[in-house]
Image (cartoon, rainbow, N blue to C red; front, side, top):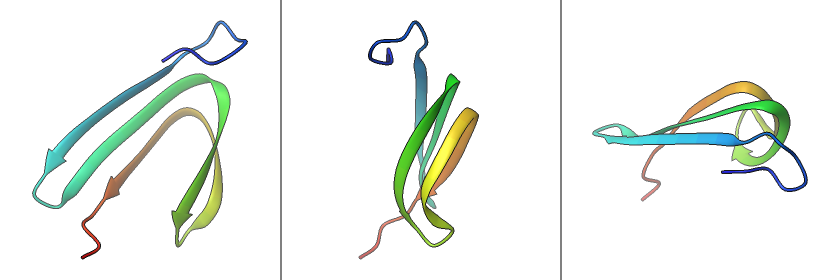
Amino acid sequence: MPLPGDQDAVRVSWRRRPDGLHYRLQTDAPLTLHLDKPEGSVATVQDTYETVLTDRR
């Protein structure tokens, strides 16, 4: 996925597993994520970010 106005890109991969949806973002350019997570609402990513989304039902 290309970054707007930049030559860099974000690589996204994901896999569904029994414990939830595992996903990974990889980028060479800094990227700010706005999250709804206990560890914080904003994360700046450069290189690799991984997390697991679980069913909140």
